[in-house]
Length: 329
Image 1: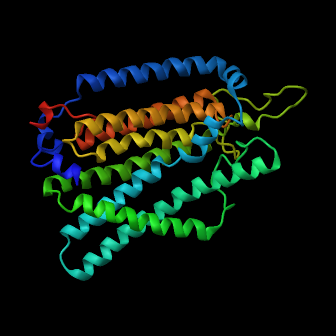
Image 2 (image 1 turned 60 degrees about the vertical axis):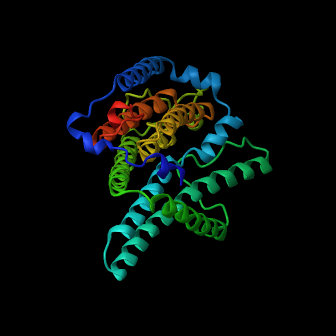
Image 3 (image 1 turned 180 degrees about the vertical axis):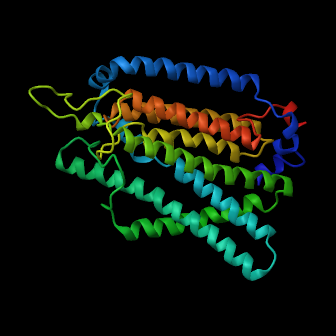
């Protein structure tokens, strides 16, 4: 594999824990993104309704693409993590029975994540197609959670095929890596699982506590088309509405964590994955405002929270988003 060849005999971040420091580039990017976040949140505090009124379009192709297919960041991180754990067990656990049982168990967890990924993708896709057939805006879908509006055999067969194929890819990718590289990837996998759990729990609990109505849920009472609107800092309590913060935006930003599954010697790919992760976070957030599923403040707060969670996780992992040559020496 190309990755293995490019990372032979490279020191890993974990070998330099005592000297690990946030780089100047990371400080600048973090400061820039947080500054943009705070300014955007301040703007949204006063103009949430105006922004939605100006840009909302449930027929937006941009909004529908990201609604259908960008909500997979969490699942992809977990699938990758369980694949790494499975083949690390295969390499390190002694005893055939225990090895097969533990590896199989980890692969079952990976398969379950693939099922969840396909559930979201198929649910939104079938909702969109159903809307188009009825002549209603294609973005009018179940924005809260996936619904079973697709053939279950399709989801299961696709999940089985994809899991088998990708398991072969992960096995071949990991089989020639040295122990230091495997140890790093195992740490990245375990911390990645924690990142997804913390992000999902934080955003999920806040959604329930805030009880904020989504833009497309606004009703008309006495001619007021924004009668259910509340600002982002107003807690409504548990009422079945969960616009704040944005879950899709959370999952979009979790693509950024995939950077830490890139071998530490492959700086070029780290740069590309970091740019990809930041772009997915920003574009997913913008798409949610465009399609009328969230207010600007919803996606801004979600972006800031998840971005900080990933940053703190990277410090725990002692890995830079993009390694410098000096950090690898």
